[in-house]
Figure 1 (cartoon, chains in turn red, purple):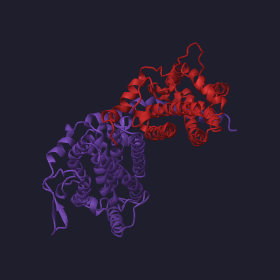
Figure 2 (cartoon, rainbow over the protein chains, first blue to last red):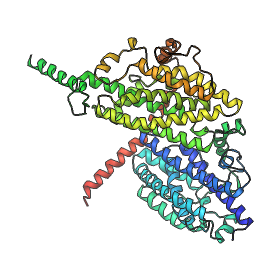
Figure 3 (cartoon, each protein chain N blue to C red):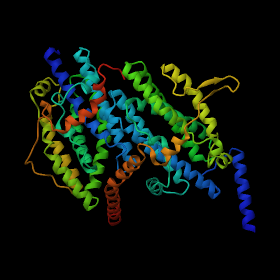
Figure 4 (cartoon, rainbow over the protein chains, first blue to last red):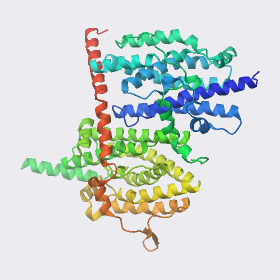
Length: 255
Length: 319
């Protein structure tokens, strides 16, 4: 039985997942026409399309649950920095090619476990989205893994840039495995994934790739958290400024 | 003497194949000038696809709805794909992609001057899809019958995708034209700014086109600049009427005896002015391409170094 509390929780959960996907899709799309060669512009566009497509699926589900006239664009375009609940790792500026690929490796490995879990959700809609997107993640992971191997074990410069990216991103990975009261309630119902369970497999997989790429795992001496509470880095505001500019300039218009 | 008559015979046979509408393939004999002419035309087309990613890419992060964002991103991705097909078609003529990119960046090779115009508003994204891609299709449909096989086959695929692009551009314009007053103004403003430059995409009048006559004989080009331009002008009039927008050409009028629309004179001064560097984005487009290419150098180096290491590992450990 899904009661009112469950429905509100699932709505909030779907919005979070939509925010994660939208914010990363927006970041990745910045690479188009800026990649190191044409094939990478195409590949980045593909990955961005997958994440933006995910955002639409989660937001549409949220809109279905809300039943109050909000649609997918409301969630993407009409909320501010404090209302977005994406994890911080997704919003960080794209940085150089190494930074973007290391972030992608971290989140692709995270999503491998997460989507496998969500695929068994008691909520059929979330399970269906997970089943579809898990296939995309397999492809994303193949690419990000191959790139991190090449960049880590390429030239001295690529190695140093890639190690720097690992070090700069590591403190944002801890938040991926946090679970707040909302997720605990939903996990107990078999609806949400208990992210705490995902960390050991993630850590093992990341270690294997970094090791093969001749890169080192940094220490756990810092961690930044707060995305699920709307407590963001300054970069999110700028991302949303750009994303929402036209939509907000012409309120109520159809496009 | 024997060499010259052999050469003349090869050229005669070559022209015969062209006249018989038999495609020329990469390994076939061809005159040097035919090869050079093709490299110039195909690479210019490839560069146009790649530079053309910038004006529309300018709105990927700002597209006004998620649906529009996905469509625009797919479209720009398609342009990158077209660039790839066309670089590959050029490579069958014995030139490398690196050489082609160097020629673009040094200014030795050209790209379509239309991409030197700025995209200032969301309406411009619609106008580019509708008018710029629409003009490109008129040209490309005729190039499906071009004499060089790899180019003709590339065009068939590109045309399918371009007609989707044109529809998405027109759909953007339709949404604006049926929207608020501000949106209708945006659509009219974009139409006004992009209509004339789109007509200029077909190149100078036939009498003034530097490469036309020989290209027609070799069937690299299949229709003249003016014939293709007229086709585009004719198809665009009812599209503008359906949008309910004003036609930017006050002299447009149906000519019953010609069976075509008569139109006002194109401002060729502007055309040459923009080509010669006075467009709003000439320098920015090239600088953007050069910057991205330079920023990616360490990535390409890493890829090469890794592949070399792998090769050495494979040599040491054949299992």
